Image 1 (cartoon, one colour):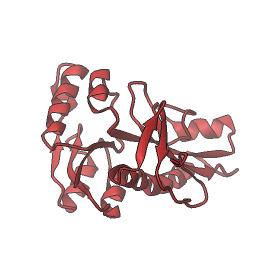
Image 2 (cartoon, helix red, strand yellow):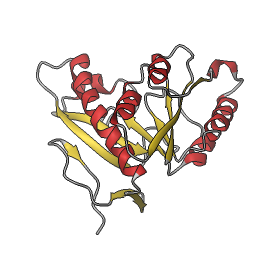
Image 3 (cartoon, helix red, strand yellow):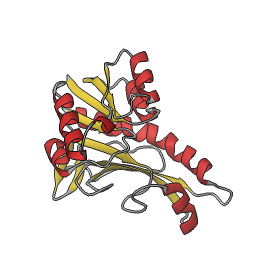
Image 4 (cartoon, helix red, strand yellow):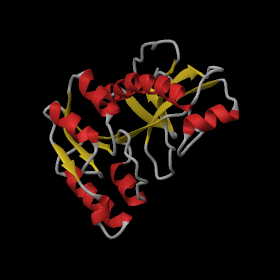
Length: 213
């Protein structure tokens, strides 16, 4: 059984999608938030998942908070750490501690539109497609080997909210898929790129990594 620890800062809809997926061989050992009022903690408890609030404001520095957070995560002996709307920049030391077993999801087709306000920036740039990316976390913000992406069209009538809603629906599909691949031992890193063993074609708009021979 693989232990998963999920970090979030808000409503936790991707955490809920992973919990609802019921991934065989996986157990969400804990959901941790840096915000005690995060809605996602309440949702996690409704699934019977242990929760913890660790307020970053109670720590003197980013380094001190990340060290405390890492210590709490380690109590659950995680095989995988999942960032699901976790809105803090992680220190290099924290990332290195969990490197190769920490995933993030970002609401753009990386490497385009890193950072915030991705949907607004995509519309302003006039791109014809947008989407979302699951990737392994590295010290550089919104960077790291890509596991899976999903593409949605940018419609002429789109605004930031309508595009965000369509992208979020895809996030709820591909994040559980990426976690499932990790739990099944089907992901490998090779020269900074992800390969997946025995991947099946996904729905239209999914972009999966190369398949191992």
